[in-house]
Length: 544
Image (cartoon, rainbow, N blue to C red; front, side, top):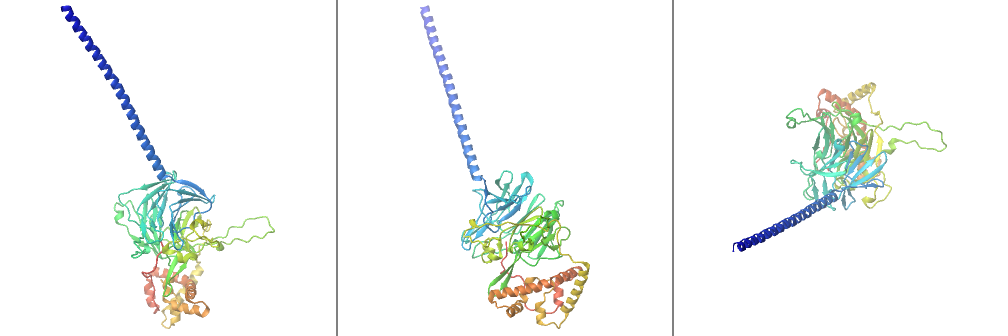
């Protein structure tokens, strides 16, 4: 009996042990299966994550892809684009712009690089970068070189609606990639502004904004200006005024104590104009200016525009001085005599057409001028934003894509500028003429014709023409068969010729006035009555 019970207990224990072992084996098998399943699921999740990341990377690359193409010839003609010298390489970068063919406006978002050495254009296109014009772009040399862009505008094809940007972008010149820069504080949306790099800062000034065709806010004089960076601060030139803004970061409160100082008009000051562009000529510590337009009011035609293609410079050191730049003929090289006749190249015959808002860039000692609005395209230019060709007027083009924009380059008076200088003998002769002029000006016996036909100290060409317009129109009528607008143009040419004749005297008088502390208005009060009036009116359109 005892043995039977013992065997039964052993048998039960063995069954329990086998069952426990079997259960333990199943548990281990389940654990292994679970681990494999978890590992498989983790691998799948990791693979999904990698796939997601790869898809994200591919989408990001597609969105930010910048394609590079070598193009045949220059870009299509356009206005209000940016024209920026490369900070490290001998290149010029052109971005954006607009073209108006009289009915439809086209805006661009392509970036071009011009190589003067190879006379080669390359295009860099991005699918997500929005098109714009009248923006500003500056360059910095750090990190392989970068282009910084802010603002600009975009309009519908029929120019009934407008959008102004307030975004900032950076184009890396080493990787050819765009990056949007986000900051807590941003300037308001704008176009027609100006930007310069001063030390480690980007300085922005001016703006233009158009809300709608029915309620337009046309730009003030601040939007048609030139902004220049010098070691001491910023120089601003607009219309016929020049200002200096001193910047001193060593002063803790320097941002709260900014003050503009108006500079005196010294030297050969360019006449009143808008839409003139000035750029730094670093090697000579000068600012070089070109082009511009003067809008003269006409009772019948509304506005008559006078375009310019003169080249002038402003001395950036000291208190500044204006000067005129002349083009030098290339030095003659000794060549073997040839029976074939070659006409000698005259720089005066290759000067670019008169235009406003030109695109300028200086590389070393060469000034490059891109095409923009010129006098041949007056009706489609200005605020409507059309572009026009520079020297390709002999070809007919229907679309902007078919038009070649020729690049103009010429040495800026080579290594030595031919600046018009007055010798001491000429200075003495000029003083005698000034004394004679002032004596006649003070006379009360002058005729109305003498008063109307003689410009006054401190009087710009526009003011002079405004007060004597009828006189010059009558004078043109006596010597010309033209009528209407053509007759008024002839009258203005007579006035401009007369003004140019007296300009050296007026400059000398203004210099004497400045030394004696006499205002031009005081002299005008002493020179007798004037006929008519003049001045900038609120209806004058401004150039961006």
